[in-house]
Image 1 (cartoon, helix red, strand yellow):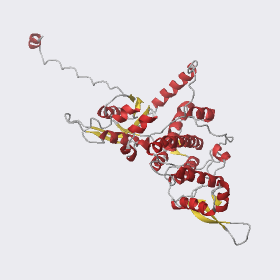
Image 2: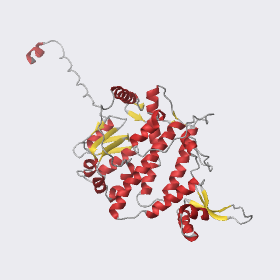
Image 3: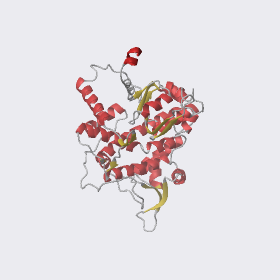
Image 4: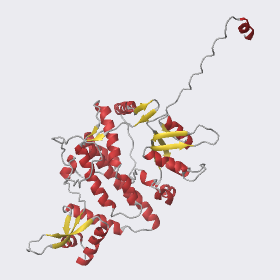
Length: 408
């Protein structure tokens, strides 16, 4: 061949260009190193689902092979809030830099193993608080029957494929930014009302629960975004506005996760021998005051909750004032000029069951605060629904309870 080329007239033909190596866009990762995980996210701007059937394998291997303690955990913490991931490789000058990195984790584990792997450092760093927890009570296992009907499987796959078609914004070639979704004025009001009563609960909590509540504060926004995207692809009507009904559904699911978190953290209370009677009393007080409209007298509290003396009642109410959840007030009585001593929650949850089920929010004081979200004018009419019965505790039962009201 070389002899033929030497005898040929003119320059030799150009060599063909080497084609680019095809990229596989991964969406789900299992057993993977965090260096590889960063590479996968770099080529998938929509993020990666890290799915582990047994979470103990993932959590137990964190930082096992990293040069500096805590680096793997730091990667996951960054991925929770769409942070920046940088991986510096010793034998390769091409470092990996990923802005807006998104990592989602799901998995299962047994209660006793969970207590063991979630040691003090993971609880102190907020790593444990970033998981939405489900700890359903044990029930008799039922025969599955014929399984999931084919039409439901088909509808689910169609929905997932449609969601996959949603793309981030590409500001310039290879640079992606999340698309912006906003709240309607009604949705914002509903979330602000949740924010107030949620943080009223938070100041009464002790131990690890305040950190858990600080993360659960934003969960309605995250869930509402998911529900909104599902609504868009299933109805075929794309919108940049999250409705009040969608926000209401997200808040309801968040309240379920809050109950599950309390059940999970009792595992650690049992382990350390901590008795939560004081915390239970505080929650009982707050519920009683809310049921009375957010304000109640000492005498009514003593009678309603069965305290032995007025002094004991005042001490219990005083702990709410000390924690910042309430303040002392004078309660008007039938006797002119002789008000009774009482207490008022600073941010009482004033919704009636009918209002809560309809997605309406109680009046929230603006206090001159600036708007954190871009909102559109309040709609003239908000869709109302009939009052609901008591919400089931199980997630499967809860989804059945929502029925066709759910946005998915």
